[in-house]
Amino acid sequence: MKTPQDVRAIVQALKELYPDGICSLQYQKDYELLFATRLSAQCTDERVNQVTPALFAQFPTLEALAAAEPEDLEPYIHSCGFFRAKARDIVFASRMLLEKYHSKVPGTMEELLALPGVGRKTANLILGDVHHTPGVVVADTHCIRITGLLGLTDGTKDPGKVEKQLRACLPPEESNDFCHRLVLHGRAVCRARKPDCPNCTLRPWCDHFQNSKEG
Image (cartoon, rainbow, N blue to C red):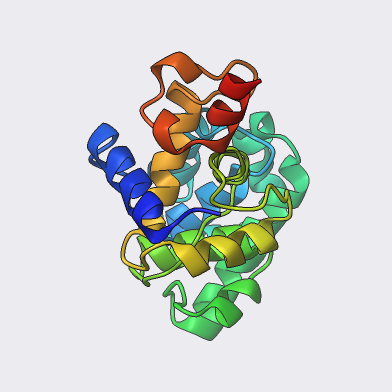
């Protein structure tokens, strides 16, 4: 595992590479991020960003989404995959937000997990990006893979364990943006199928690179 100095160095290197550190899903309203994240399951953010403008133009308010039937949404989100389940979750979550939370996206893990289709990854994203809660970790595929390669985690693929291990070592005020930067780094440099190790800024602290060099 990494020393606190190593962790700070990795955080700083990623911050210099990707200064913005923002979510790649596009949204204007808090609930739009919630539903865009639901659509992103087993789908690329790029595809979701192509789909959501027409969806939210057709259903421009939470009330409009809540008044719809799931099949009304299906044509707009068909290309995201699992469209029936996603449409159902969006409609039922819209109704729950209106009825139980006064049209606001709630700000606790327990409340978010009670919404249809919301798991810990989505909940953490909302807590970090909408409510700016320190210490949240969005353990998506990029985060799980890259932190395992770096040695920030023990290599587990279990999102819950990755989240717990990263919470223990990352500065709380940096963790949310750090996860966003890992997504950007996973797309640009540390790609799953062909990581560009020779041109990776994180080489000095990467267990995978150091081990491959020794081998």
